Amino acid sequence: MTTMDEWVTAVCAELGLDPARVPVPAVLDLTREVAHQVLRPGAPVAAYLVGVAVGGGAEPAAAAARINQLAANWPVELGSEGSDDTPSR
Image 1 (cartoon, rainbow, N blue to C red):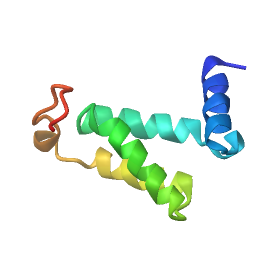
Image 2 (tube, one colour):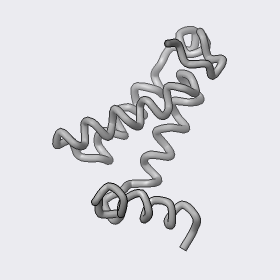
Image 3 (cartoon, helix red, strand yellow):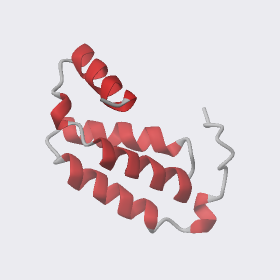
């Protein structure tokens, strides 16, 4: 078991979730794509928003794929603006 597996299992236990339903590779791909194509602070926010969508009934892999595609097509000039890793408040 990897550290990631242990972490996901522990978090799922705390939240009453089934770790088998956590698409770790899809979440990692999603956050990597958003971080590189849009901006780093957007990655955890996107992951959270996908989680909200999944909580509302969306299929996890499909929701992640849609946001991956959105990030992949994000205009570079928009992605570079304010990408200093400091979230706006």
